Amino acid sequence: MFEGFEGGRMPAAFMSAGTSSFTEFLRAVNPELLPGRHLDAAGGGTEHLTPDATTIVAMTFPGGVLLAGDRRATQGNVIANRDMDKLYRTDEFSAVAIAGSAGIGIELARLYQVELEHYEKLEGRSLSLEGKANKLAQMVRGNLGMAMQGFVVIPLLVGFDEVTEEGRVFSYDAVGGRYEEQRYHSIGSGSVFAKGSIKKLYRDDLDETTAIKVALESLYDAADEDSATGGPDLHRGIFPLVDVITEDGHRRISVEEVARLATEVVQGRSVHPDGPTARLD
Amino acid sequence: MPFYVAPEQQMKDKADYARKGIARGRSAVVLQYEGGILLVADNMSRTLHKISELYDRIGFAAVGRYPEFENLRLMGVRFADVRGYQFDRRDVSGRQLANIYAQTLGTVFSESLKPWEVEIVVAEVGDTADDDEIYRITFDGSIVDEQGFVAVGGSSEHVSNQIKDRFDARAPLSAALNAATHALAHENGEERELEATNLEVAVLDRSRQHRKFRRIHGDRLTALIEEGKRGATTTTDASDDTNTGGNEADQD
View (cartoon, each protein chain N blue to C red):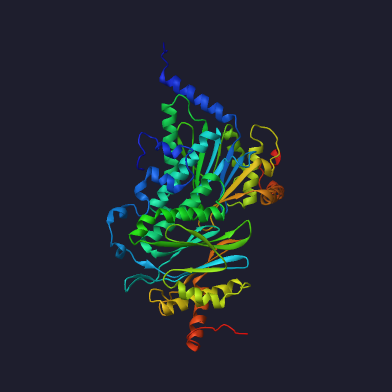
């Protein structure tokens, strides 16, 4: 019924006080399940094996934080997937999005999800937001060998800090460097354009709906300039995904709501193709 | 020089030992209510839990020696998380967990000198009340698929009988909690008043997204207890008219 369940006993590791980290535990009992295990031996030039995921934006607003991503995955010049979900709810008060090698990134996000929940269940309390951010840094660092072979995965972590009661954004580099971002950030191939767009539209007093609108405008700009980022697809009904975290916890914005706002953005662009202009005064 | 002890006698001694150990502690109750499954334990400690979450839909309640059932809890969480990560979150079931608990306890009981003095409940909330599963696993590895409600602990039979009279799978949360606390308070034929601070309460809430397990404590628990008491007085009045066999009134 379970690997190692012999003689009517689970392996000793299951019962020991041991670690409250799921990754550590998995390394002890079932290491072949860890992401990227088998690729270590693969040698160079393997990055074409998995598609790339692209633009993610995150921004804080009073009382919360928002995470949004486009839906496209590419493999060279080919669109590998039109409706990919790159956002992961990792627990009630945090979410992660990934850019880079999709195959590795999805596994990393799943493992991180279990990691947070596992800790919470074993210890009876969840990690602090700082603790969650550091844990993710360690996991990205663990992927360094893969990154050197071309499988770079860059996550973006957003969370609502229950102590300070504000939304926070953490970005990472490929070696596991962790940086807290102020107000907004973007990762992925279209991030330069998205970030430039947010910079001109961001206000400190954005409400939730306006913040979503800003995110959709920035993703539109990214898709406009970067071939690997997908814009809103009105014909197929594929829209960017938006997650919001406030003191009430994590919430995925409904397709209808995003569709309504994204359609507004697209209609606005039919009049002004470059989008809203910032006021100079 | 070791003396020969008949296996029957050996098993009986171990069982007696385990029963005595379990009987020293307070009981716990798991029962269905209209919104899912309610877990209640008589527990003074706020941090040494008798009730916990195993997985999305699965809860755990235990009585007996804390370090022993805590080991079992860790094992269950680890098993469930590995399983869910390896396959899919839907592939973790209460039946699997109940089975590994039964096997583990059975092995410990027959192979170790000292049996574990624990009794546990694994409860899984389904999409509808008919899909709910409640398993009771005893110190010797016996497993029972319970219907509707179950009590574990030293005087579980007595507690069960108390609940049986008041149990209703479609009762609101406050009424179900009232039935559970009433049964726990009269555990050994004694009259105690159980307050929020003596109780550890959690629900597997069918309507919740993702993880169904939620603890209830503090003001919300106090409010629910009060609501349950008020509800109990009115229903007792009402049932006196319609149901002549109702003996709730005698016990209040």
